Image (cartoon, rainbow, N blue to C red):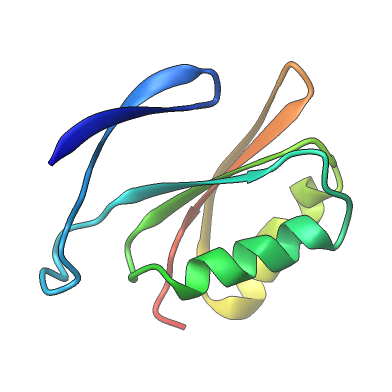
Length: 100
């Protein structure tokens, strides 16, 4: 099934998938805007628990402390911090889910 949803203010395509196909990697989104530390990190941890290794998670936050906190959390827990950027006061962090 293909549809569209909005994140980072622009439309994006997403595809549903079956967990029976481990080769398929999906992109997921977490809205952690207007939450203060440590809640964005906790929500990221909770979301990643439901994802498969190789999936990508985009986390949007307005607390700029996540620029240090989430990459450090990724290193500790075996996930890969792919990118971080700030657009109009909203920090977006891109994470690839590891096997841990």
